[in-house]
Length: 192
Image (cartoon, rainbow, N blue to C red; front, side, top):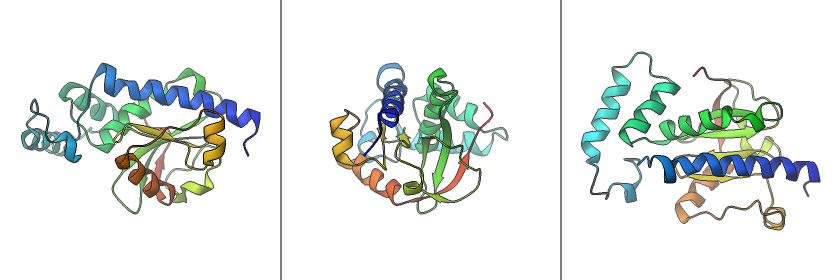
């Protein structure tokens, strides 16, 4: 069971995640060429844009988080890395997190997927760790699936305190992978 302080921290994180993910629905939709239901959009030629993204990555020696964000916001395209970069920058610069949270860009060992992890302790760069060892207030923000959740919070506490975000089947699959996954590298902080 979570304490009142832990619940307060999770409420702040939940609000920040909701605001961050609104970017994709209210400011600039970013479609992913590796999500099947995004490939049926009539306004985007995914094969052409996939080639452009790969070419942009391969020919830009300074391809890092700011160029990932720039490419995705200008083109409206991006996979998990680009969408995680957008979420990372929004959450990392959120003033409510400055003194009480560590915002990290993470990638998983078992499969190619990136997301943002918001936790209490500062995570060590380059050290593999399991999600279940991060604590109850740890939040994952997955820009690729446009989802946020607390992987170590039991459902009863989440429902009781309005901290549950009910996933689509697609989001549920990614949550299960993340919950039992191991983070390959955690980058904190990343220069913008």
